[in-house]
Length: 531
Image 1 (cartoon, rainbow, N blue to C red):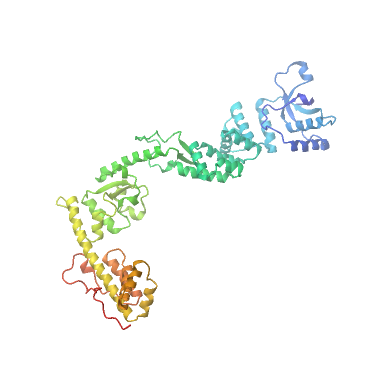
Image 2: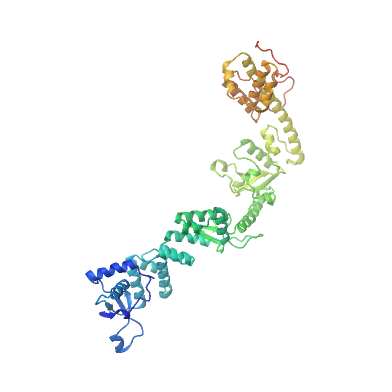
């Protein structure tokens, strides 16, 4: 290694210089420092390739390995007319291309003045020209493998975005998030601009939105337009056949990775695969259970739109057990991806025990019109036909029995309502203040009721209307037991005696003879106290 004073025009830049420009302010400050303190470190370089003979040694051309800022400072001082700055000392030695590259990188990393794009381009050149892998690149740039790969991905951004990273108007974090944005299909980005009334580019480049905003907006688009592949019940290398299916999920070019999640950008293909897989799944469940599969158009409907058997209702589960045992002709299999599979229900989950937890047994009749379920809830005995099955004729007979039980139940609840009305009326005409206070806060005087009050001809009629409205408002839908419980609860709140009824002997079969109590008739208006 020899130190040579070289004319400035004979000093050439490092062919592997990673920095694409100099900071004028930095060069000016460096020039002032050199005039005051001298050059603290002499630049290094090598003879430019191709020089031979004695003439080359007399007036050599030298390529700098590092020291470009010092060269720029010398040129600034020389141009300003400062004597002695037309030459600059350089340590000239033998350096190969790899050493030249690494010294250029080391100089710039020490100064920390490389832009993200300059750094990414230097990494790319190191890998291409010197056959380095990402680990070796990381060792030179003091970064991990993944950090190197992320930095290199910046070179996939549009040129105008790379320029903003170079001039510092865009942060590296925002640039990385924008990679996900530009990977989205253009039609998704165009729709998003209309959806948000402003494009993401305007929000970032004009309004100054940062990395988090870009990240959130990309996530919103993926949620709206793509499907996370982890939700696929099939294996990614499983071959499914059906209209609209493109190919295997594994290695599909329409997949997109984001935040360690893989998304399918072709929703139509995903839904076609889901339907094809569900057909196979339910067909296998049907073979083991002996229950037919529901029509294709209803296979993936929400459980809320199907006539399901609620796992939390003991009566409904009892109805399902009976219907399944008697091979009810209306039972079908449907797919329910959201079906609850908690520990408390697994022991009662027949389909789960045979390996099909996402299948659900439903009734093919319209919601709310399942004969088996309704019969059990009404306390009607379910009896299969002569062949032991619940066929059409057996279901018709059960329906007739259910309607008869419905009439009995409604008659009983009508009697309860009238009896409650009678109890309240009797308390009103006796000026029971607690009853008056209790009903006053609950009465609604609007609508038809106001007209009925105006048409009343006696005080007794008004009291009767009030008592009747309160009784009706406390009659909720349900079976006679629950309705009686509700009436008695309200009577207790008013300080009145409960209805003295025991329904147990009457809920299984229709009672004979006189009604349970003497029903008070509206037209038989009782005598009222003097006004």
